[in-house]
Image 1 (cartoon, one colour):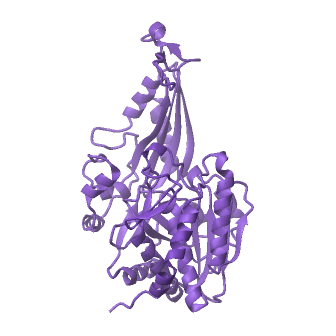
Image 2: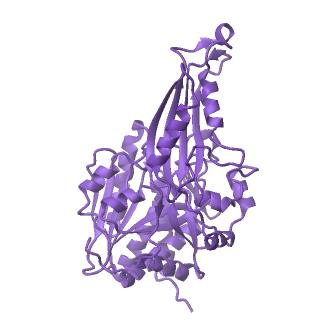
Image 3: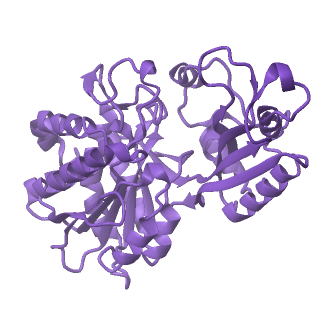
Length: 465
């Protein structure tokens, strides 16, 4: 019979304070995408530093970085024990379109077992659950069974342009045996789950230019090239009738799921009808021959995430657009190489525009896919901690989102990589009405309390630390 998680009573006592802290943090609009929120990003960093300090972490500091402020803290009082680096971000996505929110995005509330607000799931709630679990162990046991470091940066939503410099500058201080990353919306409603990997991300800006300026459609329509037409043709050619991406060579490195892997996903608790309702859609698209869960986590995808072109005044201004812009997001899976895919896409796109039509492609972000260290003792530790807190064996999943995991792993001398799922596919991350199921939040606090002890007992100290 499994014993109760060690932080159950502490969570019950601290519940109101923790929920207040969560709402206070979500209330800060730490949007890093626009410079007009820089003061709020700094306010979020200061808030994060304060809650780390209050939790009992030492050297809680807002780092003087080259860009948006990151936060560092540590507790290194467990001599001879392994070290875990908790890596995450405190910046949040822009809230637009505001008219699609049921409530103001930065006025969080708790209703029906959920906390609502921008950033509650991605990723302030998941990070706070780890911080509070660490606080709970220190409060009840006065020491941690292992060493813990936190690095919480503020460039995740802008492609982390300065993260490599930050990691390089701090690599000695950041040495660890295990890197733990919260994976927002990677869980399953009512069931424990641990992600075995994340998809990579390759994002492009595509700009088509056909002339020096927009032209009157009555005087020039039908005789001059239309930038929107050429961009739309390019976009329409990205997918085949069977849902596959048409870029040559796109699939030749894709690692197919094993029969056992497909069986695991087929038996994973997943309500597709509820998932469609939560997404607000009435049909499913994508590659033929694969289930929704397989498409979400184990198959690559290509999506147009924005198109800007033509008359945007709202008036009936009939023009032939001379320029058109689109942003594309390609999510990659093991073993796709972002550089190879980028080269193939460029060749494919350039072959689809004629002379007299200018095409410019700018790479916005390039993150390789990553796989958790499933053969490492830390992974076994996570499975045991999840089972103790949920009362059932966790499900292995693949998360469709992306993170700079491989950059962290490589620059920090290849520590083991472990993802911790917080939240579910129903959390509407990046979309209006973002939410976090409080059952998931509290279970994660309990899980991390167990995880610190499991890692301390199972993970050997490496030469890296």
